[in-house]
Amino acid sequence: MSGSVAVAQSRAPAIASTYKTPAARANASGGTLAYGSEDYDFAQWYEFPYFGLGVSFAVVDSHGTVLLAQGQLAYYARESGLAFPATPPEPDEDLFGHAEVLLQPARSGGPGRLDGREVTLVTYNVPRAPESQDADATVYVLVSPLDTEAALAPVDRWLRGGLPVAVLFVAAVAWWAAGRALRPVEGMRAELARITAADMSSRVRRPRTGDEIARLADTMNATLDRLAEAAERQRRFVADGAHELRSPLAGLRNTVEVAAAHGGVADLKVLGAGIERLQRLTDDLLLLARLERTAPARGKPVDLAAIADELVGERRYRVPPDERFTVVASGPALVTGREEELTRLLNNLMSNASRYARERITVTVAKVEPGLVRVEVRDDGPGIPPADQERIFERFARVDEARDRGHGGAGLGLAIARDIAVRHGGTLYAAGSDDGACLIAELPWAPLT
Image (cartoon, rainbow, N blue to C red; front, top):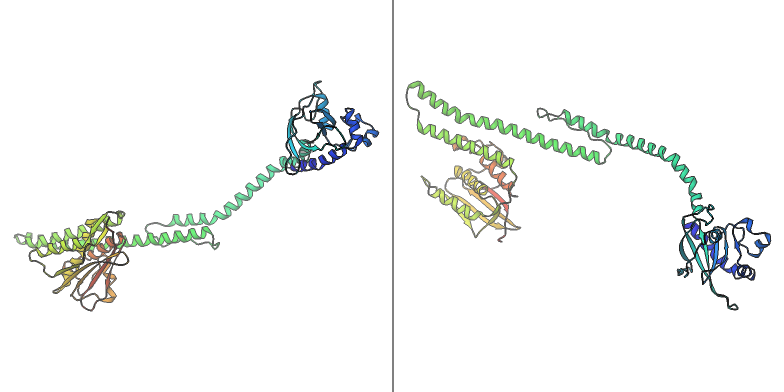
């Protein structure tokens, strides 16, 4: 359509300049209307150059009177009384205007090619001749939609015939490409279906494409590694827990059987110690299971310095009292978390130190930069060999010489303490020390609100 408008704009100035010739004005003053090739002869063709050239235009004066017309516009001006705008459209910066007119059917009922259609007219103002008193005129050139439709007809025919074939071709190519791209995914699905809880050693094969599917395979394998590690850790935990539970249960059973065999009364102190150990081990196992199952809560600000003072005070009032503990704290040390879990962390560290210390245990609570609260529990016991400074935080782990069952530990206290520290966004580790052991917990501090 834009091409037809450009053609009409190129013709409008030529028509305006030709109309200013005496021959054109003579025809216009006589009311000349050219309706088709049968309405003019060769003399008229020479009198006005646009006769017979297939251009549909009209020249209209300032009163709306048709001075000259040709082609389709001449037909509708004569047969249906086509009315042009009383006021010519305002020209744009290129001196052209545009008008939309509706072409009514002929009054006589004769057919017209553009009956009932709204068409676009390109307008161009004819300047007043300086030597003439004639009124201004406007050239209206028809932008025929028939030319555009004729140009698009071959494309429409091709689309009507070729579009279904093109759609089928694109669908077939898309189906083939999708199947080829997803074939590695099907392989990964089949490989995952073969992996069971009993055997988690298999891994999905990574395609060599280096695309998103390859990265998906890497993610799957990493997830399977974590699941396998968690399953193995759970199996070890269950096996170690069952092994640890057998010892106190066997002791209790042996005490009861001996008493029954000799007709005596079981030693209540032995029974009480065994039951206490069994209860302590069961509580630790349940706590570990709860820590793994629940997500860490945000909690509230908890003062670790106050908790350390309270725990040390409790130990001094035991029977017999434990006077080895000293708390060093310069002020409040706030940490956001659960108070019962943080209390358990400090209590486990103190209990671990109390088993192996000789005369002195120092608990230091301080706020250090950047934004950390550090808790150090240092004792003057036998210390921790460097090779075991990480292993002591494993579940049911013991150092052979210093951390045995004779001291009453099951090897879960430090594992629970580290889990609590990690749940609160911190860490727990053993530091090197020339005299005794030094366990350090670092947790993000909570500012006062």
